Length: 119
Image 1: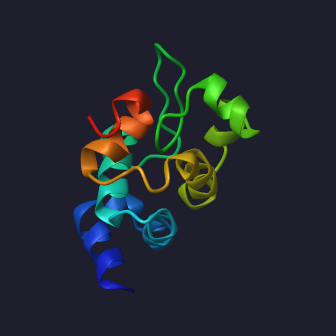
Image 2: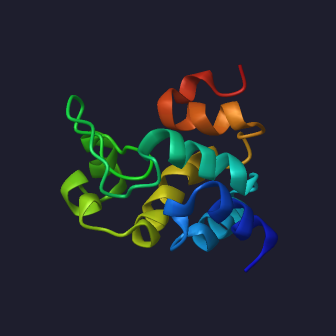
Image 3: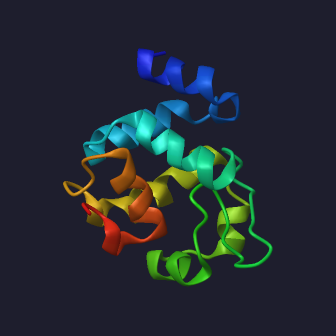
C-alpha cells in the first residue's frame, strides 16, 4: 500500500477497496489523489450506491443520467457497480479536463460546474 493509498483509507475508510484505484486514476490525470478522494467523499461519502433523490445523480461522483449516457453507461448500471468498477467511469469523466485541474477547486468544479474551472 502506497503512502497516498494509506492516507486516503485513513481519512475515508469507506474507500478502502478502491483507494489504490483513486491513486492510479489521479496519477494518470496528473492531479493530487487527495483532491479526487475529497470530491468523492463530498459527493457520495465514498458510497458507490449513493443516489440523489431529487436529481437522480448516482455513484461516487454523482453522475447525472445525461452524463452517464454521454459516457456510454447509465445511472442504473453505475448503481450496480462497486467503487472499484466505477473508478473507470470516473476516469473517463475526468479525462477531458486533464491538464486543466490545478487545484482542489478545479477538480470539484469539473464535477459540479466545469465552466468555473480555473476561475
